[in-house]
Length: 248
Image 1 (cartoon, helix red, strand yellow):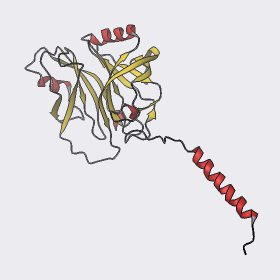
Image 2: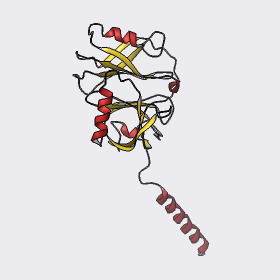
Image 3: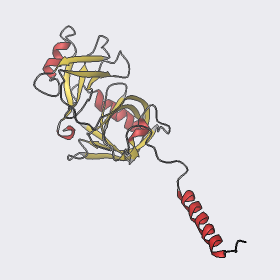
Image 4: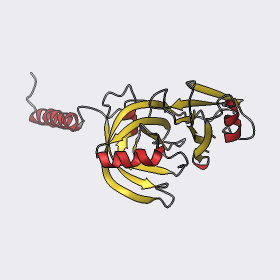
């Protein structure tokens, strides 16, 4: 005949209570960063550029978390007067000055087209110049709408043997008829170059991608790209951004 042992029941009750407490403390929705970018919460500065019809922003990437992604979006400011001022500034043919925006902390992976919880709005500070290199704050905490994600490409953190013989640039525009369009270097692996160029006076439809032989640098120089458009004499190529140090 078994003898009733109250201590065993008390022990079992404590075990159940502790187990339930652990379950209750676990979030119902574990944070998965919606892509291979994990973790990707952070302060994600972006280069702001544009033309006569649209504004774009390119995430300032690095080959370490949480910044290991090449991301380009088309955006608009909620406040119309800021939108118009920036369009006017960017539309100036000889304006190659740097502008940057700094969104409040957010998960970069939520800009992925496959994100489960995608976002379409950010609150940003707007700087004339580079926000980390003496740029001047022009507007603080302004809302922007993310009209379209043009590029979302996670960057591998694995070091590989460098066998590159060409560089690839893709075209960024609002429409194929834009007189001002942009070429952005496709990033591959470290080391690399974040390189953005402006094409003004465009009169003919551009290709979606351009490929150039890799020569002395990690990027293609303006003169070499200009020669690509020798049959379109009105098209002028100028550099608006080049970053090497952050991509070593």
